[in-house]
Image 1: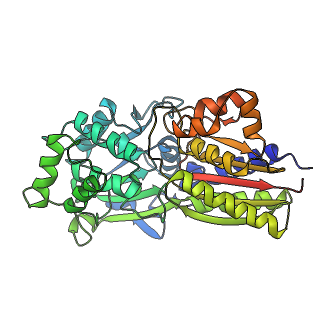
Image 2 (image 1 turned 60 degrees about the vertical axis):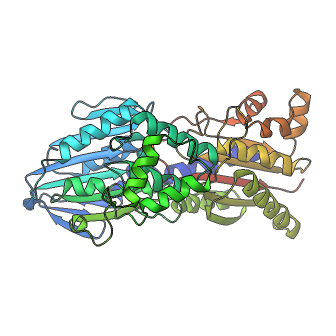
Image 3 (image 1 turned 30 degrees about the horizontal axis):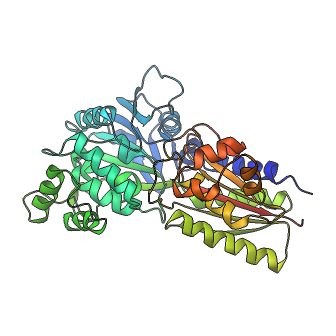
Length: 440
């Protein structure tokens, strides 16, 4: 009999290595003494007097390290903005700011203002290497007056609790910011910007990754208002947010820059890593362990509990068809509509919902983790469920259905010893689910 827990962790570690932020940058960025290759674009270094590095996101340290090691001359500026705990060491020549995520804080504001200070005086003789990974939206937060940081914090919190997806959330955030939605590119112009993106968004759209700091923004003020309306937040949002968005909709505030805007003429964008790459590596690892492997999807979206039910139904159908031992992989980013006041994250909730669906099945394991190593406001990356999770829970005096109803998955799995804790991984390519099954 296979040790499913051991195999699940082996497969997960392989996926995380494939998503490593440094390796992702190295694959797309290299240089000689005279030329820089960024994706398919060759940049003559003699055209620039100064090179600036701006690295923002949960994988900012790894991406910044790879960029710095790939550039053949000293950097004029090196700013790294990442989540608290994701910068394990200082760097003598870098300015490192640890800011709030998923809710922006005062350091998020300080980081955004510092970047604006660097970008404002740049000329055509400046090259900006912008390295962006998941979390950048919260880590850089500088709302346009009269919207305050507190107003933006509340608006973000309301949308997260309502279950807004990343596209909806960013449509609002971009229109309240002076950096997001392509406005960073506008500030940097006429400098050249090499925009390196480690994708944590389904489909890898540059306009959504990190709220599209240097990408044309297809969303509008009207769409931002529609998102708040769809979640019935019109009367709960701050008055300043409502007034600012309304002003933008009637043309009193300039729209975010669109695809035909000249500010993007000197912007080169490359997606350096994604969820699919991680899942393909996981699939290879599972096959090496003897599993028949299926990548179900890299684009999972929707309410976490509903998606968990869909995945466990697929698992049951595949088990009935034979071909054991079996590994089914999926990835994406689901959402949780918060009804209770418990502690957890979407991956822990994913595993708890799955535990209810696979209860009683022998030889089955379900693992769900966030590739950044932090699931929601917890120190866990996710959790593991098996066919006997509910039996063990009852023996420990836990009611799985009650914990799920209260969005209280963390203490449930903590009691059972089934939390997955990786620590900050230095990358972020959304979430991964690993389902294993063998003959009982």
